[in-house]
Length: 53
Image 1 (cartoon, helix red, strand yellow):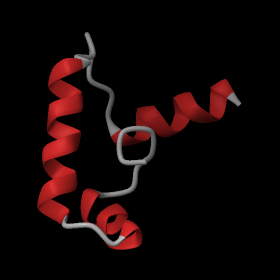
Image 2 (spheres, helix red, strand yellow; image 1 turned 30 degrees about the vertical axis):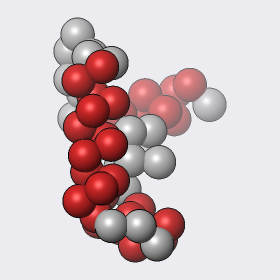
Image 3 (cartoon, rainbow, N blue to C red; image 1 turned 60 degrees about the vertical axis):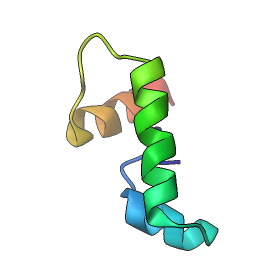
Image 4 (cartoon, rainbow, N blue to C red; image 1 turned 180 degrees about the horizontal axis):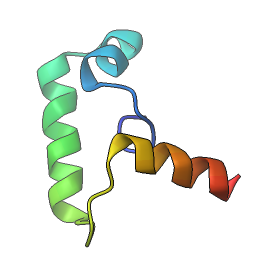
């Protein structure tokens, strides 16, 4: 939910009822294990998702 959307970690953690730090660690681990050659900004990710639809 954090990786594929523009939603902040704190909001997703609250919605899921889990600790923000835990979710932050999971996201950081995922990003280390799945590096993106060119990091897209929030606006670019939003546009990309819209184009993919």
